[in-house]
Image (cartoon, rainbow, N blue to C red):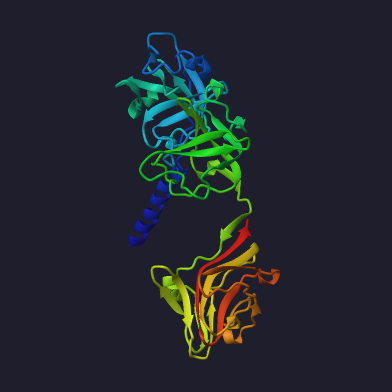
Length: 420
């Protein structure tokens, strides 16, 4: 009986399994079957006088249908297009305010939508056209639960590239009204604060200027809710994609995410390749070896730097820099300020470099970089241009004190070079 029961259980399980549909659920493709679009976005915008402060046009539900169709060009996935979508149709663009902070889940870039405008209000915010609900003397967002009354997706999103490419920025009023609220591409431009500022300050929306090749300027406007605000603006020239907007007479662009900042190439520029923290230098890669007096840190109100004093002690002591990669650097130069005191003579103090440090200065092959300037009364600067054989991944330099009768003070050490 137990055997028969087991066979019966297997048969029942097989029948149940055969009746299951294991096809993964696929969201149905949205299809719009309402009234056809009968108004272009440009024609819609013309129904309101742009710039008429605190005014709007109510698109009555009792009047003839006003239906527009456009492609979504914004995404709030990264927080910079907050509670609105932009659509465009080739004649113009319009911002539609919706009280939802995850609009990208439904209205993806490239999604075709139809908008039944009757029941909405048409106005502008500082000359930027908007659709929404007018209340409290301003354009407010359509409640999220009511958005489906007006906005209808049709089909699946398709790739959408900017239809407008700008190489110069005219004045706000000289730009075609049909270009605002549309996706544009700025070609061959650069950030004025590239490498010096982040995309946005922490606690407020921020403007950063972008210069075009012809010297005209556009302002990039970024919300402090964007998730890339702490990223540094790139250095060099490239392209920027975003929504063209305006704030009164200021032309602006709003990027959607960092993918909109494209093809930036950093030009060759001079960089400081070594920063010396003198008070902690011996814990940050600086080494010394040899005999006699030792290198130390001298620190008072007028001087902070390396110091060695061998007034009466026979000394041969090396001060060796951290390893520095110069393999991709052009025209490097090493500079420093120094001063000597005592009677031991200048020949006791020398500067060297190596690209094959053994771990012990006394067994390393060094090449001298002659020091031409000495002073006993004040700090004097010296600069050494490094030769071609120094451009290696394992470059180090060293100060050597070999003798007695002197004290040597060194600070303001800089190693600079041109990098790409």
